[in-house]
Amino acid sequence: MANPVFDNDPVFGDPRRRPNGRRAVVAQPSVDPVTLEQMYSAPSATARETGRLTYDDVIVRTAGLLTLLAAVAAGTWYGTEHGILPASTWLIGMVVGLVLGMVNAFKRQPSPVLITLYTAAEGVFLGGISLVFTALPVTGTGTGNAQPIVLQAVLGTFATFGAALWLFSSGRVRVTAKFVRWLIVAMVGYLVFQLANVVLSFFVAGDAFGPLRSGGWGLLIGVFAVGLAAANLIVDFDAIKRGVVAGAPRRYAWTAAFGLVVTLVWLYLEMLRIFAILSGRR
Image (cartoon, rainbow, N blue to C red; front, side, top):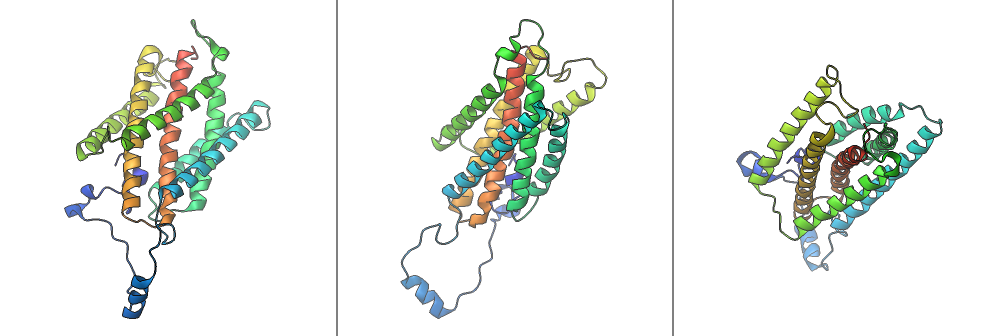
């Protein structure tokens, strides 16, 4: 998996990458013959009644987290713009979100509290950084504040999400071992490029996006990053499907929702950067 949230999870992890192709096994308590006979005689139960993961569980938790994300982001934007919060508040959200994201990604059991706190921290980060991008000075022939870059980024994010979901559900894109290997290589290359951009920004003059992500070149990198994020979403959908088919416990809906939020936050940031460059902000 390219998304560590799913890759390191014993339920959603791809069995093709486990030693000897072993599958994840959830321990089940032993059942005595009388209880077993009662179970066979009882009417069949739905996945929800047996405590298994369903798509509805994932949808509800993902929608809840995204609502919280949007609400906190809006509150942070308003508070920062009106001087209620310090201008650097988004930096705190970024650091806290990064730490909580790493903790949640490597936890074996999902923690609803930590996942909710991560989402709130990311809301603080996104609200603040969106305001920063909007306030960037306009150069060249850009239209500046006439461009609603935040709205454009939000619409672009959900449009990409919908397109990725359609490609996966229609079977037009299949998650194979080759697809995952390509995605991992591309992700590593992108991360190395991003690190180089950050390091060079301390020594080479450039705009707010760094010397390697300026102008037309920055747009090309942004489009490439959006493609990577979309591919990650498709892999995420595949992991969720395997979790539902395998009858994973319902609590793992939190893990699935967290993984989707992580990818959507990254996708939104790439969209925001693209529309900021297009509007002439530097």
